[in-house]
Length: 398
Image (cartoon, rainbow, N blue to C red):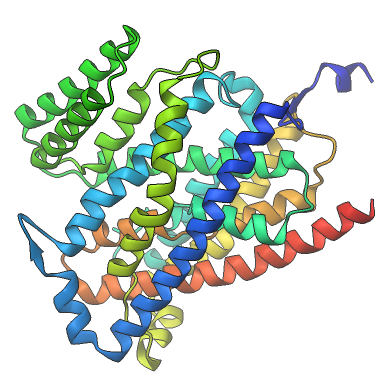
């Protein structure tokens, strides 16, 4: 009884402010997930019915970049900017404000990144295939996972939805680090310094409560452009800008919440669906589908997402509650954790970006890897959605 009292209850139901914010995020991600699904279907139909015209479209130059580059390097920066804002909110006033209180999702997210990578390396290592795609199955798609949970798990405890949201945020942070460290070649240090200077200037101005929208836009665009020229993936600039924003929950004009509410709809409704349209168009004929289940690289990605994610997150989360004082809210049971972990196997937006980065010199392998991501995401959505629906019914009866 004493130990139970002293234990930290991770992700209790929270106050009204937290519930409202979570509801807003789930609502935005549900709409964004539906649009992303529609864009993915359109891309697949287009690529499989007229591969030539689809290829010409995504490689069409618009100014200095191709359509695909504008989506991956430009629009996805907006997606990572929103992720940076959400991460800043969690670090300053949310569940990550005290890491000890968020020990379970933090460690579960790490397990959910490490185990899928190990599964991929094991599959490819046995056959002697390329190991460069180990980062692909590490990524969880926050929009799709939360959309499926919102649709199928509406009766689940709020605490479980908060767990999945925080887990996905930590997962995004891990993906950001991987992109910055692993997929960065030669660096133009002068351009990188200029990008960091823009982010630093924005941070200092925010601390001085200079919140002009034009200043934020100019410095944000400067950070993005200089980062693009530096050789570091420009999505990193989006994260830096997001983390630079001032958070003041007692201010009615809190810059963090203001920009988050401004940008979240654009990210969910425009940026991610357009990226899906120009990136998800891969052949899904007989040989391509067979390759997913018979070739080491796509099979490693498939097993990493479908099996590695659920094992890594579930086992790590449960072991954390077993050997530390951290606990889930009383309403959350072990099957609930497994259902959320299965949904984390939906790796779409960031996983497709990882495919582009890892297999940039091999279009065939990139196509097979993307097909594996799509199939794995579908399997994880079906399994996780079914599990969430069943657990929701059980909670409703209870």
